[in-house]
Image 1 (cartoon, rainbow, N blue to C red):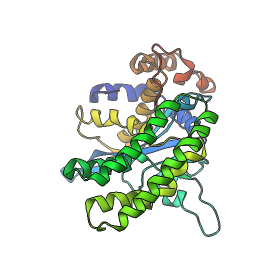
Image 2 (image 1 turned 90 degrees about the vertical axis):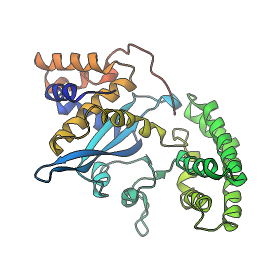
Image 3 (image 1 turned 60 degrees about the vertical axis):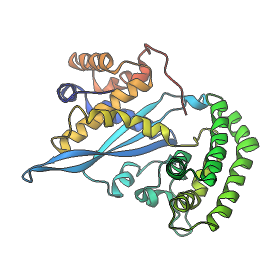
Image 4 (image 1 turned 45 degrees about the vertical axis):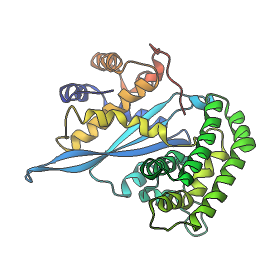
Length: 312
């Protein structure tokens, strides 16, 4: 969804932030989330310039494994990208965490002495593929092409099992993907020893090897994904929004915008046109809809106008 500054200003005055919080509570209670973040410019009063804030998304979508429940996307705003931000957002979260290699997640995903990590980290193969593809596009090395072909075979399996029950997805991955992934790991180790660690191809391979345990974790549960694309897709709308208004006016505006994105993008995930849905919510709130009936307002309690697209 793309909103102009004027539309955003009108909507933030009408949406009860408690609806966004309810969506967030639901999303973070599902035991599996996909997360990513993106920068946003924010006015710095008295400095004559902007500073960089951050939007974070915590998404959930059970449709790729025919799971129960509805998809949701919970957005949070922060004035910076310090590691304490995601740690605070996920303080009470328990379950699998799909995320990139940002070190801010380490306090959550790394063991503490003899204690296991708070949440297992599921890394994304799309990041590995992207780095290898950049090398291949630049110099066309055969080694990069071979790695990309193997990754393509892994993705082909995922395309076949998308939308299948979790038990079937797990069985297919164990029967077909595991051996491919093991061979790719051994091959990367062998090729990496032959390359300079300073070369772009060597760095791309080392990126994958450094995260291998997390990259292979999707084999452990049929509900997991080979990549973090769900979260990345949920941030594209914000990237488009930057073309309509280049900066936020304040941190308070960032928090309000996060609430709007939560409601609007969750509506889209559930097959609703977000603008009439938000208008209907505002109308119900204006007519005195009580907080005790907040459970009636989330998008998954409204009838989809178009069939939702299942990807993952």
